[in-house]
Image (tube, rainbow, N blue to C red; front, side, top):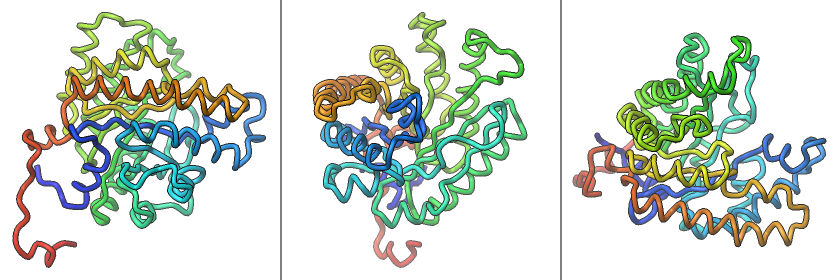
Length: 331
């Protein structure tokens, strides 16, 4: 599989020296406001959000291959404050928090005033898009796929790496219980990987293809992750989806053994920190606990995962040589 020089550079910036993507997600907005003030999320100020993200970024970035931040409260702020080193990869989200439509037909909207071109201009390594996705809801899925395809084209034009994060969800009107949704989730996640990676994206940020509250047989979980790996045409990393750290640690090991190229961990690393009101105490939690968790996950990924370039057919980590005069035709 061919890869352009700009995308190659971006993907290299997201990975560690072993080709593993050991990344931290700090682009939460609505969910973080609710975590910081459950009774009145709207009372959480701009500076409250910025302070939380900058403190967390400062604590975990030294141990991450890359950090995912949002443009509203984190990305430019982390660069300007110096808490995100220039040698670290930076992913920036483009979606608006939440979704339009009802809970059974969720449509992703892009953040107004923001774009792929602007992500490129600010010097980021990659664009990230979260979409809610149910492959069995054909009409909604086609709209969501059209959005992915449109942004994929823009990333091709900018020669920018593109990471997509599809999230499944229950359809409440059908009366699906938590257990019932857990039964269909593996099929949803695997088929989603197949459809999303048929488009010209670069990295899939995948859900774990099972709910370990209902399925704990590691042999079955490994088999499901292997099916996910086969379905994905692109490198994939595991998202944490708000599970506790010990659960995510187990998931990362299974996923990496099946072929994942790392993880993009969010709340599993730091969610307890949102309940700490003292900024100094919270910073100690970030430095002592969140950073330690990230290091543990990175060790697991480096031990069991597959470098991201394996999926593209470059198993030795060597890419096609650059031909003389390549720059003339580079567009």
